Image (cartoon, rainbow, N blue to C red; front, side):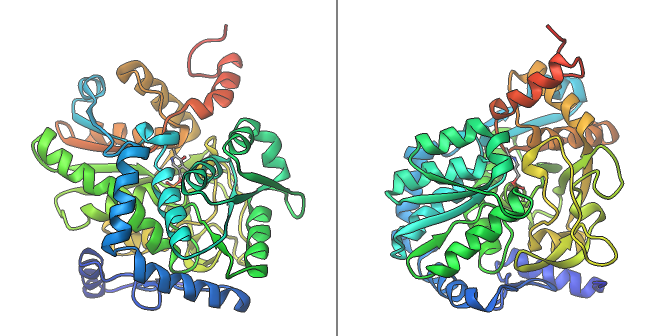
Length: 419
Ligand SMILES: *Cc1c(COP(=O)(O)O)cnc(C)c1O
């Protein structure tokens, strides 16, 4: 499959995105997106889309969400002037601090919004699935706050690998269901969570963790994460004296990046750069750079770019950061790449680790390994474009990554030295 657009089509689509006209009624972002789900799920998705239309932008829901974002999540998050990095890079660097949000990353913006929506739609329970466990933790916290019981499906292999996050979910009152079928990781957990939803589509709410999946999820998640870009845009004006010349965010499924980028799409003088996981090499299976190297195809309910072989087999992926380790990406990013409004780059595991260490040293901030990919590419760009104003979406804190970092440290690989 090949998707190409004329310059005129690209211009029109960007205009529609900026005007808030995409996705269209069919859930399409130009040629991407849509709703490719099993027949059994279609009524539930249609009901959800109707619920989103009715409530998401209604004053009552927005007032409730706004109050919880302020008092419970801790918004607005700070915009920090990165003095140390500015000096080192010869640039003016600003950090949008989602690491300061409750539970330590942007994921809570989405989990909270959807938990409140689930309650408003009259669901009795929430279903979620998680790979590394970060979305599971955010969902467990948000559901506790909203007074909704929740069950989190997680591959049995991941349950073993991510014990601290499993214990956090349990502590927060979630039920964690280990999945032993298939590959016993995220893919199997998604299948199992869908099965649960199909069995009880009226009483359950499926809380999806990134800007992926069938319509209306990519739209819903973007709207809930766009608070990042709206705040950052106003804060740049107020604190930095004007818009950024370039804004960077890491891209896994694409939720923190679309949240930062979407409100900036109309600022044509701001270059937008999404950074994917370059892993340990350019070969298939060695990275998860979906937008950089992927091709159009359908995965988990929507048409987007994905990492697949010539027969359409979805590829294994690799990244040092579990949150970027996914073969697909949200459809709005696929469109933004195709129309050229956002540039997508990749940073390797080694680049990300070096950038993480530099951010610790220069700013006293330990970013998540995912986030470190954005820093790595911003550093490269600053080197090629001296003296510019740079905004980096600091999607989360790195405390969760200490087991990985400790292992690398003691293996003498970086960052830091072996004890
Ligand atoms: C989950 C996660 C990501 C990747 O997910 P997106 O949906 O692409 O934002 C990035 N950063 C952090 C800190 C995460 O926890």
